[in-house]
Image 1: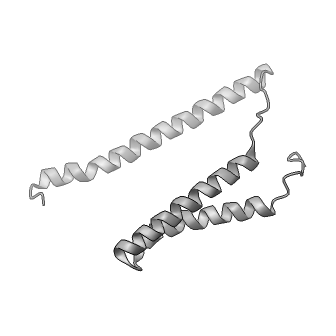
Image 2 (image 1 turned 30 degrees about the vertical axis):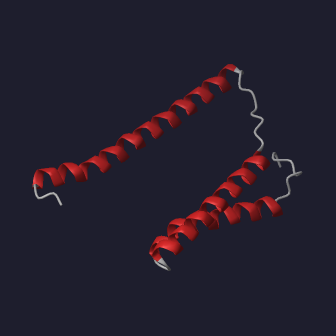
Image 3 (image 1 turned 120 degrees about the vertical axis):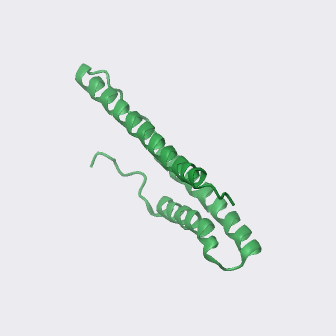
Length: 113
């Protein structure tokens, strides 16, 4: 345990600074991409993206389900039923929801409608 008040303040500021810097980086990258796309639209050089959403949803659903299941089993084995189980149940639930979405979505429907 750190007894120095100055050290405790510095240690508590480090995560806040990390969040602020990370948020700034994300904000600037989104702003950069928006400006880039806006200029491409004005110049007429914007190419429509060919992104495979079906494969993306399946991949992310499988990854989140697997990771969530393993984390849930790990937390269950180490701590029993406790609030730490949420660390595994949340990604597991999101993954299962994505897999359900993958199964029930009509992938042949035109996305421009």
